[in-house]
Amino acid sequence: MPRDEEAETQVLTGLDFTSHSGTLPITVPRPSAPPDGAVRKTVRTFGELLVTAGIVVLLFVVYEVYVTDWVSAGKQREASAELDDRWSNGRHVRTEPIEGKAFARIYIPSFGADYTFTIQEGVDAATLEIGPGHYKDTALPGEPGNFAVAGHRVGKGAPFNDLDLLNSCDAIVIETADRFFVYRVLPMKEETGSWEGDQGRESQCVNVPTLRDPSVADGGPYGATFGRVIVTPDRRDAVAPVPYQSGDALPAASRASLLTLTTCHPKFSARLRMIIHAVLTKEFQKEPGAGYGDLLRRIGEA
Amino acid sequence: MYAWIWRHLPGPVTARVAIAALLVTGVIALLMLWIFPWLEPMLPFNEVAVDDG
Image 1 (tube, rainbow over the protein chains, first blue to last red):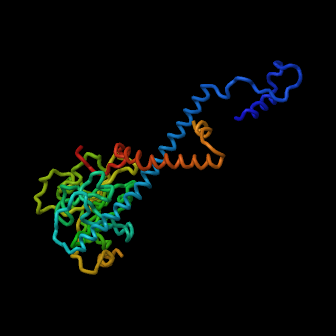
Image 2: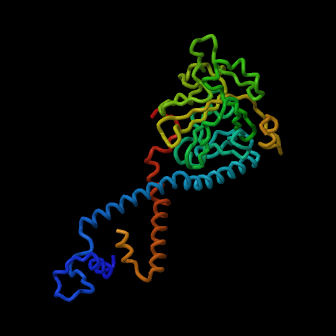
Image 3: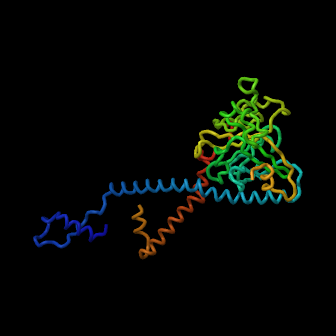
């Protein structure tokens, strides 16, 4: 508060008249009292620091949810261009994926025709910043076993933001150098009971079995493999060749070809993981000039 | 704190406003470009993989 204003306030409140010489004072600036005491100053500074801390936390949310999106979008563009480059160079030999590099694309038609991300090899933080990452020791696209992919649900492009919206029989398309693989989400836990009866109802559910063995009480090796499963973060066996079973549960030849997507759950939390299991239903050799749009028409999703 | 900074900014009010805006922008840039990227890996928000660990 400026000096003269303060003096005026004092006159108006009528304090201190006795200390004057008798003539009515116009202004009486108090000579030495500091404007604010030490306690007042400390309290105010403390308050300002708290407000500042609150703003910094809000800025961090903005960073986490928006800024990382822009950064990742740039990296995703780069990876996608590089992948196109490699594929168009005519090297159609199937090579092992290189760590941190894109080797496939994922499309989810029910998230819109423009939903696509490159899949990189590995699930470390730097790789997942580019886009979804492939668990290194799991199967490759189309192979029997479990092609497992992790992706962010919040920030960093949030490729797996909407995994909770996937329904059974929704298509998940994986594109490699020479093929398209069409996986479809397995029946949800509550649907498995009546699945065989309902299955013919929708054309997209053709070839989507429950994988459960009806002759066994717990459903056999795939008894716990549903379309969507919520697990604790330590369930590494969610991406095992036969999910939730030890490595040698089934001989390699009789394993189903699965696709597994993992992301965090609930949204904005790291407490649990959401797991989506899908099964390979169709496989197409890529034809020159025919892209994802043509594939969508062929599988009836366009 | 902020009053103290304001009092120590030079020039007329318009200049002070400009300098203050510049300072705020600088602090936000510092947070977004260096501090948050450094801090983020230490926080558990972005764990999406299943692991034995």
